[in-house]
Image 1 (tube, rainbow, N blue to C red):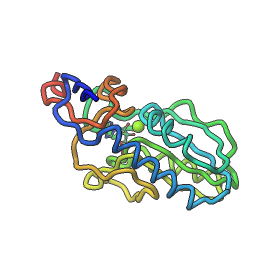
Image 2 (image 1 turned 90 degrees about the horizontal axis):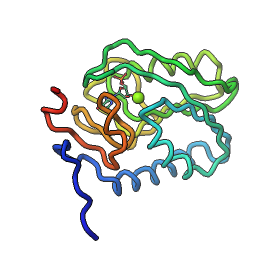
Image 3 (image 1 turned 60 degrees about the vertical axis):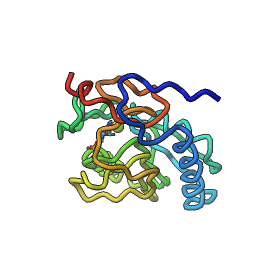
Image 4 (image 1 turned 90 degrees about the vertical axis):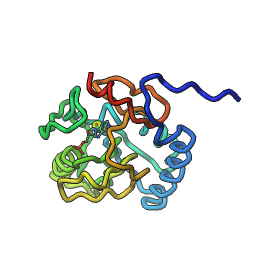
Amino acid sequence: MAKPRLHPDVAEVLLTERRIHRRIATLAREIAKCYSDKEVTIITVLNGSMVFLGELLHRLPMPTRLDSIVARSYGARTTSSGRVRTRCQWQLSLKDKHVLLVDDILDTGQTLKMIRDRLRRECPASLRTCVLLNKPTRREVDLQPDFVGFNIPDKFVVGYGLDFAERYRNLPCIAVLKPEIYRA
Ligand code: IMP
Ligand code: MG
């Protein structure tokens, strides 16, 4: 089969689609083992997590409910503004439910910590976090994710749902862009 052509703005592919899908299949088994047949209420952080969640969700065998929250802290930059803004909060009742918070990437941890603290106030039976990517060296808050797809180095990545200034979410792999694209 012909090798898929690399997007001209990509400097380096960190994770191929094949590798991501294989890891998500394993991750789904780890999550299934943790909850066995208990119902799980998934709260996913949009927009970045939608591709990851889509691949993960259909591999989970237990009963699930799904809801979301929209968060934004980056805008057209590669570093967090430190101010996490959210909108379109979840609607489902979370009291006494097993809640799994799903996001694309854990960077400083500000976003997930803020959402996790809010979810906690709803008195769920349990609250766990799952991220596709983790940049452990960048953490600014005390948050250890329960499920992690990949630990990656401190590089700004795009693709597989992750964006730079809302672009590149549709790349099938996780990649680093050429420096001039980030500077533009
Ligand atoms: P944190 O609050 O610093 O942990 O950042 C979390 C959010 O910032 C993630 O949900 C992403 O939307 C975004 N983000 C962090 N690092 C990256 C990256 O390398 N590429 C794209 N988005 C990122
Ligand atoms: Mg995000």
